[in-house]
Length: 237
Image (cartoon, rainbow, N blue to C red):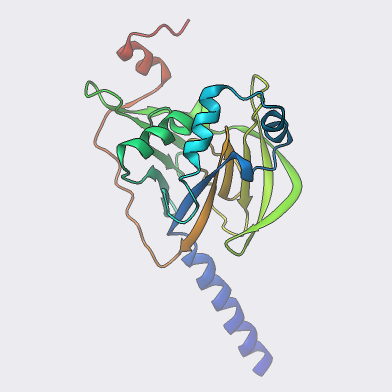
C-alpha cells in the first residue's frame, strides 16, 4: 500500500509538471557569429572574405554581449508569440538588418497549425501574413546535443531550396513538448532554445513556467501569400 501511495504521488507530480509546461515565457539574448560552431562561418572569417558590411555589422554586434534579453517567446497550449523588445533605434535597426527583415512580431496557432508574421513595415494596410508554406520547414535532426538553461537540446539543420554559406541551425528540446520555434521557423518536435541564423546566435537565458501569458493577436486581416502580393502590388508568377 505504501508503494502504491508513493507511485501515485510521483505520477501526480509528473502530471502537474507536464501541465505547468503548457504555458510560460522564455527570454532570449544574442551574440555575434564568433560564438558559432558553423565551420563555413569560421573559415570565411579566417580567410578575410567577409564583405565590408558584414564586417562592420559584426563589429556592431559586439554590443550584444549576452547580458541583456532582446527577445521573448510567450506561449500556451494553443498559440505562441515571438517578438523583439523595444530597443533604441540603432540596436533595432541592426537586428532588423541581420535577421528580421523588419518583421518584429511572429505568431503561431498550434491548434490550426498556422503561422503568421505581423506585416506593418509601412503604415498602409498592416496585416498578418500567413507563412505556412515557408514556416513548417524541413529539418535534418542530428545526434549533436548541448545544454541550454538546464535542458538537453538537439541540433537540427534547416534544409533550404538554395544552399547557403551560412545554413541555419536550431537547438530544440523535446523536454518541453510544444512545437514552437523562433522567428517563423517551426516544424521541430520541441521548443527551440537556440538558433544560429545568418551570423548571429540567439539563445534562451531564462524559462518561466509560472507565467500564464494571454496571446493577444492583432485585430488585423489575415492574408495568404497571394493576397499579400496583390495588396502590395507584387507579381506571384
